[in-house]
Length: 211
Image 1: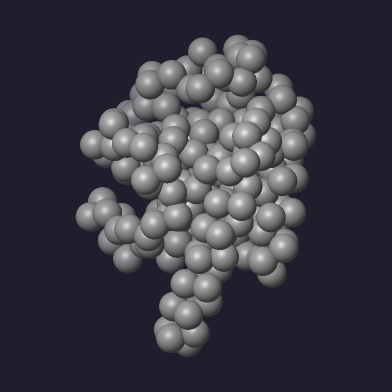
Image 2: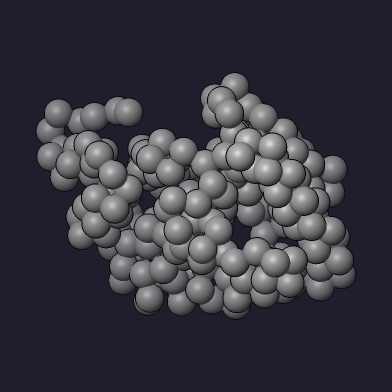
């Protein structure tokens, strides 16, 4: 984990021994590592259960998230909760939901590379402390920034498939359409539901085998 000898605030966050300490330290840090700090209301760390085995990663907080300080609480998050509930999965109990960057970009634009780079140590620390068995990447932006080398790809050919990556040993990944995309194009909703069912069935079988 990279440390900055001259940044005591960042080092305190990255030196957190537990997830609860990490969340508290980051939320209270008033981080100013990138320009997003000048327009945000709150640092959005997560939503859900940090002791769950499933980690969901989106791209960035939106307006509702920025105001409430919780990830995925707007329309897209509500849709995600509903779709997961329909397959018997409680997002608040069975997963932790985070974003690649922790502050809202203006007008909900995609985060810029420099903003992602500034937030990357915090993202890596979250993954390290949660130690998930599964990571669901919500949308193309999350996939591009989490998996090195994923520059050119088709979401239609990528979503709903399990894969592993050497940078994250022991973790199974699945890419899903971002729920905000489903709101814009409801025709993809049946595909999303099938992918969620595939994930739930696979997760249940794997955890049953491990127990």
